[in-house]
Image 1 (spheres, rainbow, N blue to C red):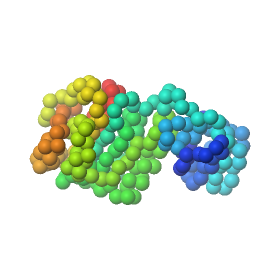
Image 2 (spheres, rainbow, N blue to C red; image 1 turned 120 degrees about the vertical axis):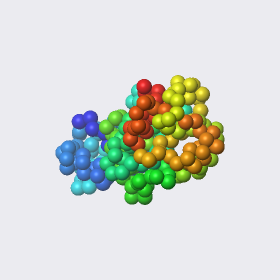
Image 3 (cartoon, one colour; image 1 turned 90 degrees about the vertical axis):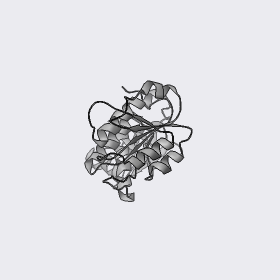
Length: 238
């Protein structure tokens, strides 16, 4: 058994306990038994090979081996911190967006509050996104969690990134020169607006804060497509 499981908190010593959905999945769905081997992570950048020592109704006790700290065990994106600020789409498209940004190694997702936005990032919605991050990390082998930040407006967001680079996805702007952006060696914030686009006032606010407008190709992209295309280029995946 080579399944990966998420620990709600980093372990102390060589024992850990899975609880909740993680424990139920291992014990009831996969029928894990004492002696079976799994891998666990706690979002801290390392993973632990583990062996089941006890299976109870709603918890599974594990014995941990030494943590894997070799970078090859966590294919995280190298380079400066990468944030995607996105006017979230509706429904299941949010789950798909989070999954792909996690796989690409994006460090932080900021739900962007915009005039034409269609989805509100409530506490419940953010909780669902965070669970999606964990599931994506389990699948792709990432050992650090994509941070789901509190919702922000463009003005609030860009006031905190004076030392970084802000890139606004704009279908009417010149093509993005991702190589030059990455070569600057600064933290990057990529902004993606709602289906109706940013308003003129929002674009003006971004430009006053020093943001650069950049195109992602000849076609009008949906929110999640634009976010993933922008993330892939800024992360150096394409």
